[in-house]
Image 1 (cartoon, rainbow, N blue to C red):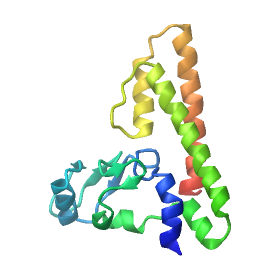
Image 2: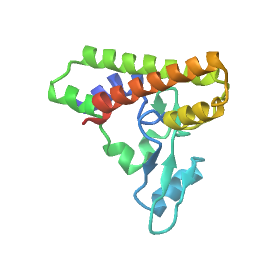
Image 3: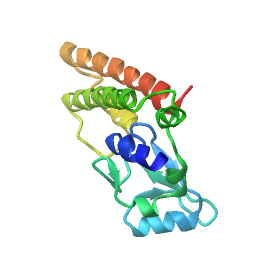
Image 4: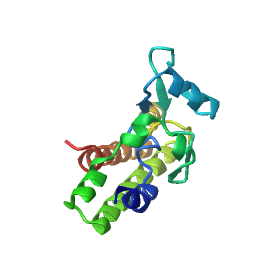
Length: 170
């Protein structure tokens, strides 16, 4: 059943790979890190004893799908967000889960729009880091930009709350 749910839900979402949920992903060991580096993915702080960190957004994410799915890191293979777990338990229906994903994607898209409006590029950084950078770059702005800054802060707070409650739990 899980395979069909991941096909139904995860491929409509991608938030665990696009930098919206996590800034990085901890890898199991140096061998895993090396294999991912060979595939062209960005790894930070890798050494023989520690696997290092797979930088988000993941370079293997194509649209909402993992392009290295059969070779993805162990932690990616075992991760199931709170929403997926709730659907698997029958606590949330598939249609309701799709609605929750759509709501999150819409809010995240608004944050990205505001980041661009504040004059920062679309650098491949985790969403929260992009937001912090946009707020820092626009600090010395006039009243119109200050309103955009306030709107971005409110939008990002809304996203963080939704992500925590829907996908990460707690």
